Image 1 (cartoon, rainbow, N blue to C red):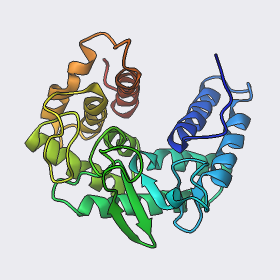
Image 2: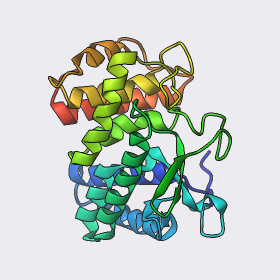
Image 3: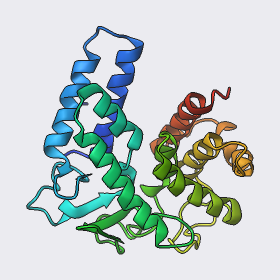
Length: 254
């Protein structure tokens, strides 16, 4: 049953807007573009920290909320911001893209691993990883359920700064292997694999094929050799997105 909710999650809204733009390219003339533009304008109005020039975690994290200055690393979607600029002509989206990538790069430089946390706090141009339970869970300051999407989201773009961040992460994964989460120093949170973590790494490694990361492609392609889980929507969704994204980025057949 569908229910209306006054509370949003910005990453979901951004991906919905992208999906509408994609639908317009496939089925033009059905109103998808106008719906996308309306949503993009609402995102800018209700889900942007205008001072920090970044996406907030949701419309509820407004100026009156202490979470107004929280960055969710999975909200850094350079390709989406490029598409929003192209369809609206609004230069602010390119500013948001640059600022958010800059925040992410600062997080990447804090540790040799290049890993970024699920959440971080922004104060002027200073960025620090969140501590446990400061925002949502005990893993707020770890490379966990939100940050795991970052390699795929960055690989979708051809931005040089995005490439620097994701390649540093891939170097770590190549050396350390993968698992369902890490501390920022590179310690495994769990000693098992998860498609939610493997799928984005597969996409990123495929984007930079023949650049030293091909072992990760072989290592993570197991996600396509088994049925999509019926009891884990996150694993299933990211596996499907990995298939779609890898095909678009590289032209590889699955």
